[in-house]
Image 1 (cartoon, rainbow, N blue to C red):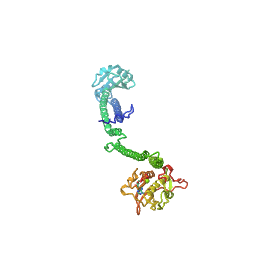
Image 2 (tube, rainbow, N blue to C red):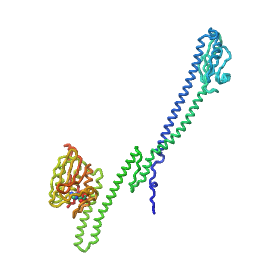
Image 3 (cartoon, rainbow, N blue to C red):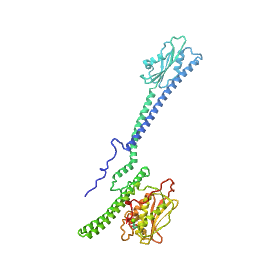
Length: 507
Ligand SMILES: Nc1ncnc2c1ncn2[C@@H]1O[C@H](COP(=O)(O)OP(=O)(O)OP(=O)(O)O)[C@@H](O)[C@H]1O
Ligand SMILES: [Mg+2]
């Protein structure tokens, strides 16, 4: 017992080295976009928060300065008199003002008095002893202003000096406002750290979801590829399951329809080869049989057999000619469409058909319409019909050729008063090797009408057979109507088929 190997081995995955799957690419793109969005949001929050802290500090400093200036302009609330000295003003200010958590107020009485510091959370004297601080205060003692101390043991610290002058004092006094920003900055850093952790976790979740979702969405595409890989030229019967109702389903449906057409095409081709092979085998068997029985010493026998064999070879040549013609029929250059006068065409066919046999040839009426056609091929088709009509009638029977036209279509037909075609055979006779009633001595193959059908299809038209009055059949070609040609256009040349394509017996 043998088992057929799976086709997976014979169908390598055709992804180039270094190329990534669509799923990976979708996941990467989504992840990168999400990461960029999150990083952007984090950065924005950081920048806004940092700006807020600075704004708050500036406001705080402004507020303290404004309060001090207001006190400077006013009267001593204890005495109701203007302040006696700058020292008194500074002391009153520091007594009445409670510094914020991250603030320190320091007063320097004019002259070289000792500074007094007030701060809720830090050791004021330690801060006062810091060289960085002292340098800033010394620098700003006369001019006033704010200095930011970045590299300071208490973290980022702002030192603002408001000088207070007294006329008879050698050195000015000052109010110093110290703001410690470190806590606020730490708070922002903590927030950003928490945000970064949450963002990274979310990103991980996004990677998982994007990977699984894109995998799920692309699953039909994978099934499609796998099934397509499994479909060999020998078995075109498999179809891809159609699930859902999205664009991938539409693609699946298109591929399935294409497979239908391919299967039909391959089936027809196989059938055609079968039939053609079979038909060619018969004459070859006949040839062989005759040659085997031939007595080479009997001159009469040789002569008779020679005649027979030549006839058989003619038949084979005709069959091969028909098969070549049918094979050509699918090609785009099979017909060269040009405007053709239907009247010329009809009369031309009738004139040529008369030679096919002794019949009562008639004209069923001729249309003066024009049609976009290959005159040679159309003549060939109509002569096939006339040849059939002759084969299915006897001497004296009527065979008529005619044409008519309406707004949309042109009809050309061949009518006879012969055997007619039984209703049930009317579909089959247009197929290759399809035959119905066959009279004695009719050596046809059943290819004539399939040639007619192929020619008509190349003209975007149709062909059908119907009963004729009073008896017999009428084969009608229906072609789409076209406008008459402009006078400067060259009409179709000689409509006669070339000798090798001549579809009727030469006799
Ligand atoms: N005018 C007709 N009257 C009656 N039957 C017809 C007529 N034309 C065709 N048929 C039937 O249709 C069949 C197919 O015709 P078709 O022309 O395809 O083949 P054929 O004439 O038998 O052979 P070939 O044309 O290859 O020499 C014929 O065998 C015959 O049975
Ligand atoms: Mg025929």
